[in-house]
Image (cartoon, rainbow, N blue to C red; front, side, top):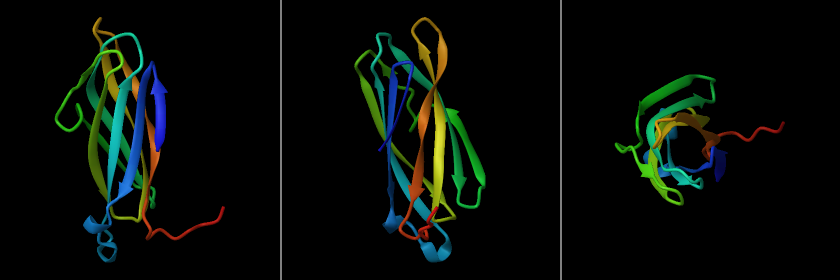
Length: 130
C-alpha cells in the first residue's frame, strides 16, 4: 500500500496485477488500483480533476487528464472518505504511476493533492539485483 498526505488529504493506493485480464505472450499486462481519498482536515473539499503520469519499463510516458474520478467529483466533509477502483494496461510487465488530484475548498481555494507513486509489478518481470 502507498500513502501520501497533502494539506490534510490522505491518499492511499493499492495496486493489484490482474492475471486473468493479462496476456504476457501478447505483451498485454493489466492492473487494477484501489484508491482511498480521506479528508483528515477541518474544511470540506471537492475533487475536481485528476492528472496521472504512467511510465512503463521502457521509459515511455502516458499522461491522463480528466474531470473527477470514475465519473464522479466527490465532495468530502471533514472525516469523510471516498474509495474507487480503476485500472490501467501496459505493454511491459511493470511500470509506475504517479499523479495529482485538483481539489477545491468551499471558499474557492484550489490546490493539488499528491497521489503517491506506486509500482505496477507483475510476476512476469525479471528480478534485477541493484
